[in-house]
Length: 441
Image 1 (tube, helix red, strand yellow):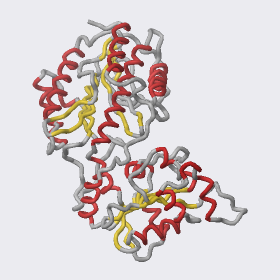
Image 2 (cartoon, helix red, strand yellow; image 1 turned 135 degrees about the vertical axis):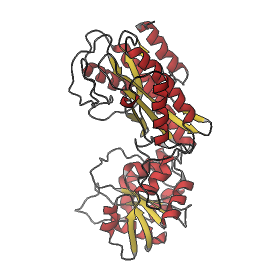
Image 3 (tube, helix red, strand yellow; image 1 turned 30 degrees about the horizontal axis):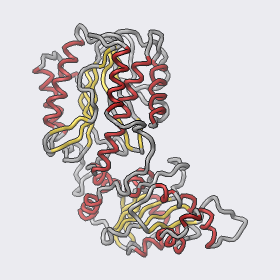
Image 4 (cartoon, one colour; image 1 turned 30 degrees about the vertical axis):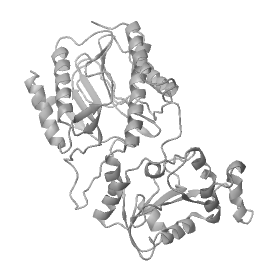
């Protein structure tokens, strides 16, 4: 039976009832998010003495720092240095104007070293007292800030080189997540290598704190999708729908990026093409249309993903009905199989076999894929420590892995389900609360 708007609003209220009032309001994060044991192991297997991370997401992963003003293609005025032999004493190097950020969101790293940056005048000589501009009076005697004063530098390069020397990383093998930074430092006795894979190896298995943040992000996405459906009327266009989703996300406290939060494109008529949303489609979303909600965004920089099929004002019918039923069966089969050690190719073969068993005539047409999820929609090393490509990767306990099931078809037949799954030894644990059936109105 199709659900009316009143029932949808009741479902939306149920989602909100299971979490506190204002559930997505910005709050201080845990002081440590990162999986240090896996990072140290990854460094050992690759012979790395240290890692210097300066890309925004790795910086956030290791320190909890999320700068307000920085854009991705600007020079990064921060870095964190981690030495394998001194795992309890990482060092943060950061622009002086960001120093007080660590008062609002405390960090497990206590050695935070500022350097004189772009806000300071070039027409006046630099002074050690310049750092006082960025320290609130009420916190001037905090122990780590006292240390920050003592280590104030007049430029980032000297600040980094001093920190490297203090950690014993002025020689040996050091991984940089931005090799360009390593090369610009001109370190004579250091072998510079790429740190992408060891950092992704660490990020692929989530800490308890990360799982909580991913659960919270998924709840926001589910709530935003439910609100978007409730906003539809017979005159709504795809652009209206995309805007309604963006507005719902923003009102809840999340973020989407340009050109929008809804990922799939939706060809009209009988066209089964698989395309992505470009933000320019403004045709009407008529009753009976199968809308494939695959929504991306972030909360506390942690990504949400997924959604499922909404049959506008109706239920699956005709050829779509058995496909919808089969997809539910496939999802249930996958959840049981998503255990540590399972390979992606095995899960894909299992899914296709489940489609065939459920009576789908062309199971090979189904698109079945997986990826990691966390601060990115990847969170996987590309190459193992022994040089093997990590293509047919294996699940590990503690991973968060969205499963994607798409059966292509026209506007009234296509069917989509993406569930975000926490991998446990007992099988996959879904992070959405709404099950595997279609959304109907």
